[in-house]
Length: 120
Image: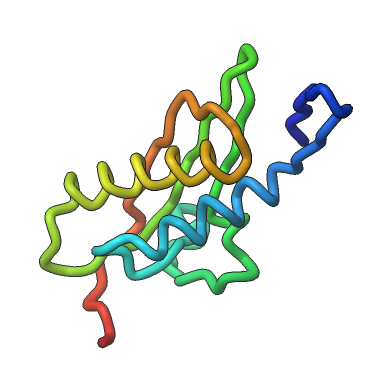
């Protein structure tokens, strides 16, 4: 799936993998995030931390009725306030995608897949 933007200079096509990679990179830079988790973890019953090249496995980008929705599956650091971490990730992802790609994101949904002690 891809997003098409019509500009004065022509047509720009952005794939969902690009959106997922940017959103994942932004999320893991936020305070309190240990890493991204696989969205199929519930089925696998293992909370695996994804590496940079696999961020798309932990992010679902949906387009419904012309609105863009992003689902992030993350692992948070032990001892952090989960609601604050989730709110920070939501606002950072929305801002970064808006600034870098010019996309308006309708919702960023956070799914906490685990809590781990962060390695310093």
